[in-house]
Structure formats: C-alpha cells, structure tokens
Length: 262
Image (cartoon, rainbow, N blue to C red):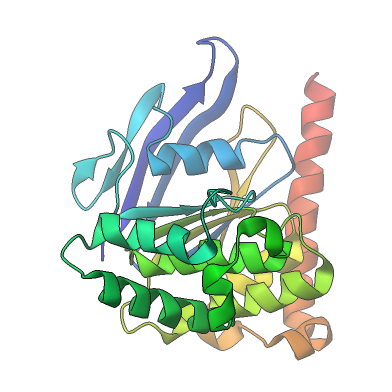
C-alpha cells in the first residue's frame, strides 16, 4: 500500500496565474485525508494532479517510489457526476471496470463480484439491470463507489462525491465510505475533496486546508483515532467543536488576508 509524496508542486493553467503554490506534503499509506477549503482554491486541481489527469508546472508527486506521469489503475477516482455510462446498465458499468482490472475473470465471476459489490454499498440485485436514468443520485453514487472499491486501488481519490446529494443521503454515504475504509485489513489511502468542515471532521484522520489561490497549505491537522467521535455525539463533544471552530477560523483568516492584499 503506497504512500504519496507531494514534493514542492506548483500549478498554473496558462503559465502565468498560479493555482497552487509550493505544496509539500507526505501522506502515509492508509490515511484518510480530506482536502478542505473554499470553492476555487485549487482542491480539485490538486486531486487531478494526484490522479495524473493534469501535470505539475513544477515539483513532482511520488507514489510508491515513482513519479506520476499519467493516470493509473493504482489510483481510483470518484467524481461528483457519478461517471457512469448512460447507455449501459449499472451492472454493465461495474463489470466493464472489473474486466479492465481483472481480465482473467470469467463472465460469471465478473457478474458474481458485481452483485457482491452492489450489496456492499447497500443496493439490491435489481439495480444490476437498471440504467443510470432509472436510479436516484444516491444510488448512482453508490454504484460509482462500488466501482472504485471493486477495482481495489490502493489510492482512492474522491472529488466532492456527495456535493449534489440531499442531507440524509449524504450522511448515509459518508458513513458507508467511512465504514468500507475502516473494515479493510489494509486500508486504502483516500483523498477526499470537500468544502464542508463537518464532513471533513466526520470522515478524515487528517485534514489539509488550502488557502486562497494561489493556494498553499495553511493547516495540516491530524486527528488521532481516540479523538474521533460518532455522528450522534458530534455536536456534543467540546473538543471536536473546538477543532471545528479552529478550522473555520483558519479559512476566514486566510480570506481576510487575501482581501487585504488585493
């Protein structure tokens, strides 16, 4: 299970306006990292760089001793828009991904594994034959998560995957992803982009806060396992509420600095 070394990277789209500026981080294998910050601060850009979908303007990102030079099956991605082909059934979408990762599996084995994955994300067998248009947003995102965990990448990148969902469905999927991660013998390294402080605190054991563009790391917070609390006690734990307020202050203070410098 590889860790990730982000070595002094910067990025700009046009060679002039910097989006990210000198990001330098080491992520241990098995960490659940939330990348937190205001909209437009470069969170998704950083995720795309780790995914290999964009190239650093300077610096490099090292995974398992090798510099990232493009996309790879060791890095799964879950986007906000679900990423399902609309002309294929949910089952066929999952089978396609599994076949690419496990070409030696038979059709029967691929279907059996797909049905197991659907069950693991709380969907019944009937979803296998349904098209994305027949599924709710939450069901489509469950399918996308089933694909991501099904191809079993050691690194999973999630770009605001629950941002378009209602509050109840969002809470259910947050708990589901957290549970899937915790149940693994060898936990995946997860990068999860969000602008929601509460979501970050409920999911992550490490929170990276990016400042205003050109973004740098303004806070790197590790949360020990014994300091994490369940959802039902989240707003009753004084220490967690202090962390929540501190994170909000970091973000607001950076915004005020940015406005003064304009």
